[in-house]
Image (tube, rainbow over all chains, first blue to last red; front, side, top):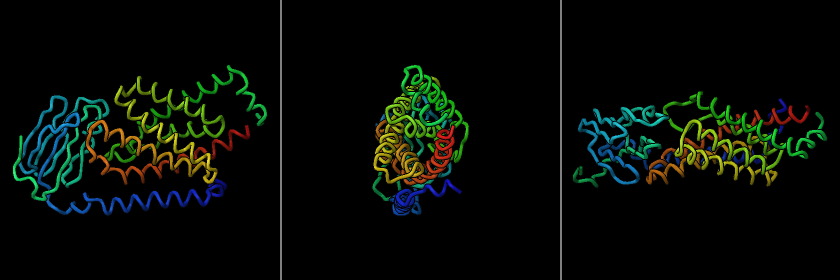
Length: 124
Length: 173
């Protein structure tokens, strides 16, 4: 097929470098390493500032005004959002450290931090 | 039309306007079609990047100036129509970074249109991630970086193959 005949050596090298470096990042990323460690803390930021920090084991519903975030049985999900694209709602449930739900239009990020013992208190 | 006539399009202002308008309209409708095709709904930001097809064709057939202009107008118009101010920031970052990378790679002439396109796809996703990290002031979004680079490469390869076929056919007209 003539489409494959135009592929140059540099194309293949570029593709291999990009894919393998991302695969390496995926494999060695701290979130992957911590993936097996138990999750403990749910951190919510709004407009770049910490909105609240919650334990993932306490079932809770947090209403930020624009978004409703639910912590339930060790999982977190965005129940609703008033934004247009609803990407955050479609992200689904997260439960492992390093996972994040992001609502770009409302500038809200919900991330799970690993249970490394650095949090000795849960602040509200 | 043969190659000589194709160059004539760009000699007259009316030809240039018609060319840019046609490609801008095409890229806008492809942006919309793109948003209708969810590839992996669980991971945000993974798209086919069909609009890049038009930008690549403009880059190869008309030159960098046309491609950049069409790209910026497309982002502004689709932004005002569908996504709003945050959406414009977000897609502008992706569009400009991907354009810059594609332009540089094309200038080196080591790469075919497929290589240029796949690098553009990856750069688009990196640009969006950078603006997301800035807007949210949280670097945890870089957790998605490897996934987005891989998806950008794959979708970029697909659009690169499409644009190669299209550029060949359009040159034959």
